Length: 409
Image (cartoon, one colour):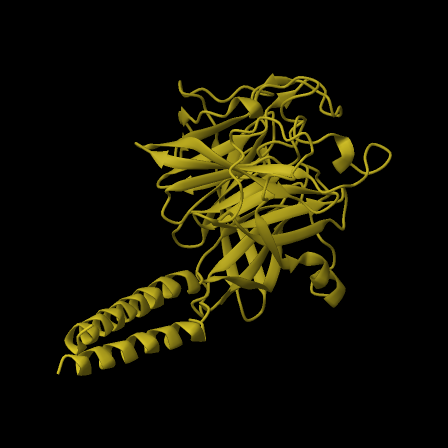
């Protein structure tokens, strides 16, 4: 082989080294920069609307979810009163220095059907609410023939509907996958444990909801406490709705494993694959309230699996990391008790520029139980730095470039 040909081959090899070094560094950089996530929720304070408060001839209570209007300090808060489905407009003033949280009622909006008539009593159990544009989406768990029975059958189907944010008139209903509607002794949703949650991504491209407890065909009663079950983790589902041609269409579903004796009460979307999950346990104060950050990135899409049957060996659940356990605030004395916190939302931006998260509690429409609001400042984690191997690999590419240039002289 001639010296000229040999040098040409070396040059080509060094040039390929350069390209691979540059390309590898770019690919590694893309894989190594992690999105900003929520590292901590710092407690600011808690306020309430007293139980037994009346407003526009309604009993203020059963507040099961909350959504921020995006302007000033106003929020929409849904009541799960089956006799009079409605949501309140609430102003929440937050004093970060004193920790004073002051909610005040501004308005109440009755939910109506597409003809403008109030929704009939006992035809809905409204639990979730989220604002999208000037409208609100609201979820209902449905009505069962025997609310106290674990094998109760649906009388009125659950729904997710779009309502006009000002008039309360129904605009449209989303299609719900059959597995979440069909209810038999062995299939479908269970009484009072259906669509508690509702959230939308900041760009409003993706809507999420979830079942509070496992579908009958996904898990037997093992998630219940003894003597009914063995207090295993609950195998619940998160449902993703994608915005397609002006409406939201059901798509992927993901397995979420609750902590033992906890249910999935609410979701809060950080982006299209990262959520906060509010889990609630116990049936009376002090409640167990935990908030997790979860990632859908590595989770299996189980939308095509109609029944898990308790077997998750071939299914990757969403990953979850604990962000907040309200029991720690109880132990530190920052909270006197833990209320029945049922809903959460991003709130107004705080004076220091931080985002806020607001929780609302459900008093069960009991006159002697307050409607609580708790506010937290969001502490985010910075993106992870690019690992050292990238700079080393990139450096090798630059070395290759230098040698290749010298070989051309």
